Amino acid sequence: MRSAQVLGIAQIGEPVLRERAREVTREELADEEFQAFVDDLIATMRHANGAGLAAIQVFRPIRVCALEVQDNPRYPYKPNIPLTVLVNPVLTPISSERFDNYEGCLSVPDLRGVVSRHAEIRVQAWDRHGQELDFIARGITAGTYQHECDHLDGKLFVDRVEDPSSFTTWKGFTRYKEAEFKARVQRVVERWGS
Ligand code: NI
Image (cartoon, rainbow, N blue to C red; front, top):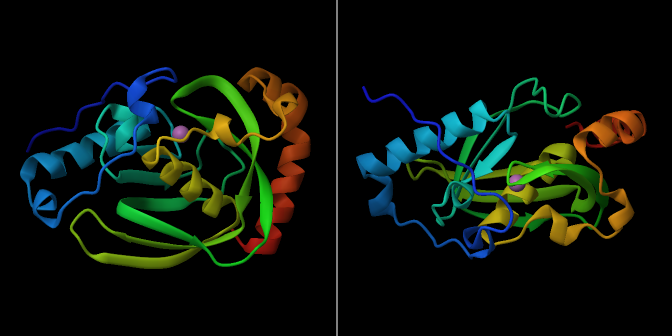
């Protein structure tokens, strides 16, 4: 068996990050090369301790992203998410409630900022083999889904930051913002269960 490769991650300024990724066809899913790419995407996400990674971030502008949170050291407060691969995902907010999320991104080195996200969303997609997925995501986990799916439309979290004074390095986040944000996350988790 071929072992998965760790791919290079595009950094902000790379034009590919601003493209709209194209839909994937069912035929492509059956392709060995496509499945090997998905393995590489997952390996790259894990290697970088990402909570998620979109194909476009590894220079392949197709509508595929992977998510996984397993006691993530980059985001110690994030509820766990089992490994999930979404193909052609569509997100629909199912309530008007929102919450503020302190986000970071593997394509935006050493920067975090506050983004307002929908608190409850419906996720419809295929898995990597074309099985229909249809589920509800809530709270912090819903925020992670919205962040990854933004990538597929060429959007980065920095575009959505309403208060630029919330921008901080990771060191600054730990030093000045983390305690307050953790308390806020706790309230979101209590309210939304994830
Ligand atoms: Ni990102």
